[in-house]
Image 1 (tube, rainbow, N blue to C red):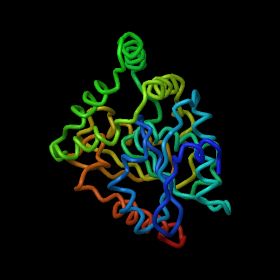
Image 2: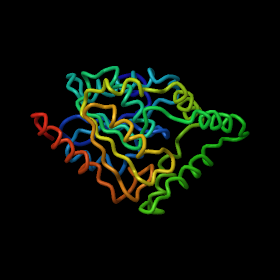
Image 3: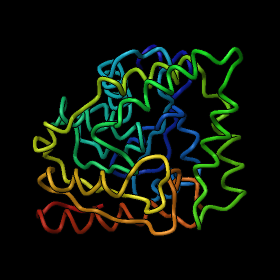
Amino acid sequence: MSSWLESEARLTILGAGPPLVMVPGMDATGRLFYRQAPLLGERYRVATYATRDSARTMGDLVSDLDGVLSVLASSGEPVTLFGESFGGGIALSYALERPERVAELVLLNTFPWFGPQRRLRLANLALRMTPWNPMPLVRRWTARRLRASRTGPDDVRRFIEVSADTTLDGYRNRLRILRDYDVRPRLHEIRAPTLLIAAEEDRLVPSVQQARLMAARIPDATIVFLPGHGHECVISHEIDLGKIVGEWSRLSSRRAGRPGT
């Protein structure tokens, strides 16, 4: 096991079946998959992990993800990558660098480029100028932005609780990484069947617009829209990603003549 995974107990594996890795978003914790990992675990062997706060480049995060794959799929078999928000950027970057290790790609409320860039500069400036740890304020602001017609108050409270360990340094580093992140020119290189899931009431990322942009450029892409849901729909008790991903995978495999999950 990679030393950073082993020393910080960052990796959790559950379920049985084909390997699937859930890549966390900006809050960097696999704990936010508490509702969806068990559902996916009915069809897959699921790994969740916490992103390393000290990572300074997307290359660092891609290397760390490779370490997770080396544990989950030590024989080298291709895996399904599930990337949420910022984690979708890691998953996309990994699929471009190690296409032979990716059997399927599932991207939830994510983007191939984060714009406008002035939002990143303003966020970095605000974090630097705040004289105390601003993470509780960031979490509360994010929680307000989670509000959608089908996001319950209990779901939001759980989000704040589970993301409480998000660190200021880690958040800053991930914002810096986004400044240099842009895979739009390479989307046509993605060879894995790709499922793009977009919440229609996402107030953090224009997920529907970004999903359509990616679907137009990725050769084998399918879009599923989630009406009434917001950015952190992984916490919703109304969403079953195990069912959504499983049904898509079976149809995709059938079209390609591959065994389905």
